[in-house]
Image (cartoon, rainbow, N blue to C red; front, top):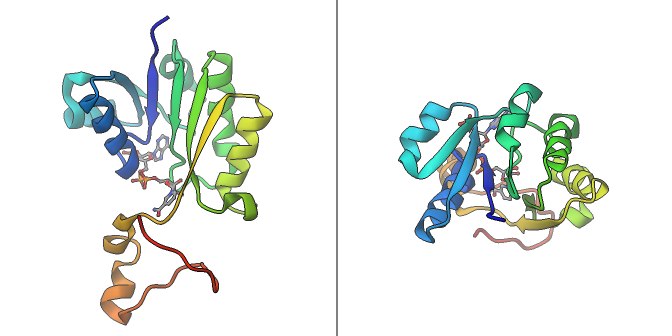
Length: 167
Ligand SMILES: NC(=O)c1ccc[n+]([C@@H]2O[C@H](COP(=O)([O-])OP(=O)(O)OC[C@H]3O[C@@H](n4cnc5c(N)ncnc54)[C@H](OP(=O)(O)O)[C@@H]3O)[C@@H](O)[C@H]2O)c1
């Protein structure tokens, strides 16, 4: 059976890089996006762009049809598991064989972040998974932390007395 990889968050920082990397390796994928026209303009004909919104279950069945692998990015604005779980349940019902979830470094010791609830949901659904527990992205320096650096010449990061780094 051939595989169909579905990428969420494909128009975002990580998802776009994942799509580009798959393309370099000549692996085709489908992107699940809120604006298929925009994604098609970004990636051209080398991807199939389908309508998908975590908050609109009506978009799930056509996005998930025949998928074998799901790359799951939690949109930063969606912090409640109730906003993500319905899509995971639909992915399970569609027969997805592997969920690769962009999670967060230290999530196993920090149960209040949304990623912890998503990891638990994936495990409770007994979906085969890979959790990518990523650290801070370098891109944050020119986005989230830009003003702190510019205005205060400093970085404010919830790392306590721990050491951390940017990737
Ligand atoms: N920054 C870090 O240092 C860091 C480290 C570890 C983990 N993470 C995790 O990485 C994730 C964010 O990744 P990113 O930076 O690549 O995100 P991003 O650039 O902010 O992109 C978010 C993506 O989600 C899509 N999206 C937003 N709302 C949606 C919805 N309702 N339904 C479907 N798609 C929706 C957006 O599509 P549209 O084009 O439609 O808006 C966009 O493609 C977060 O979960 C974050 O916690 C970040």
